[in-house]
Image (cartoon, helix red, strand yellow):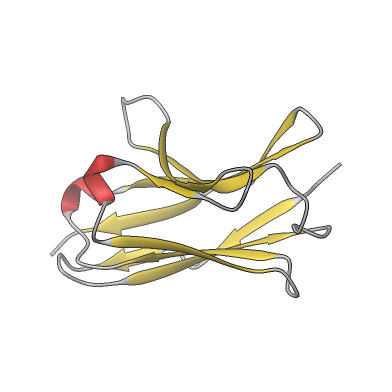
Amino acid sequence: QVQLVESGGGLVQPGGSLRLSCAASRSIFSINAMGWYRQAPGKERELVAIFTSGGRSKFADSVKGRFTISRDNEKNTVYLQMNNLKPEDTAVYYCYASVDLRDYWGQGTQVTVSS
């Protein structure tokens, strides 16, 4: 079993930056996939960025060139650096991990982009 704890959300103006962190309760070195989803009000949860098996990363088209995903295996933490934020990035951001064919989710952190 894996517990995921997000942090780093908040209110930011358009064009600003935020960094989200997701700390896992166990080593992430061998986790199959780990990354970030988001859900805006009235919309379905969608993939933002994720590390897949083999260490490759995948991004939603809407965030390519603005968001980066990174990991620190020693700290069991995955980060989402979000730059040039737009109002449409407003959502609850969830950390996700796939371990031994089971899906795990964090509690979510709110990101609001507004002037």
